[in-house]
Length: 84
Image 1 (cartoon, one colour):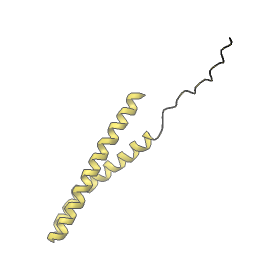
Image 2 (cartoon, rainbow, N blue to C red; image 1 turned 90 degrees about the vertical axis):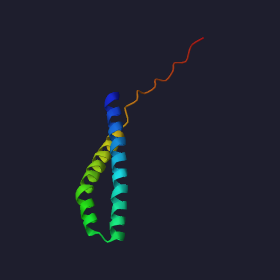
Image 3 (cartoon, rainbow, N blue to C red; image 1 turned 45 degrees about the vertical axis):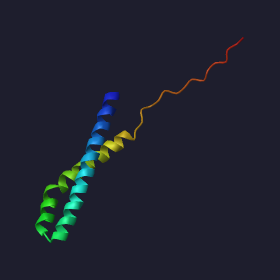
Image 4 (cartoon, helix red, strand yellow; image 1 turned 120 degrees about the horizontal axis):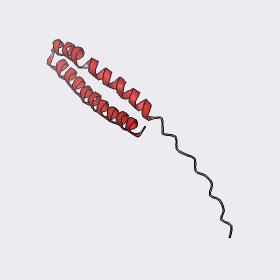
């Protein structure tokens, strides 16, 4: 079970990095395209980068949801009073 949680954590971190980097590239590319007046750049970014970013965001959200479930901890037994 520990390896499954570790795999989900790695998946979460990787997809988070991909979607953050992709989002930065997407927004900066759109800003540059708008300033340069290049509508083709906006279309290119929308066609090539948007879909992988959305997929990474969805996978990251599911992984984060799965990580929200904590492993059930065994309840501590009350210690018996030692008779002296």
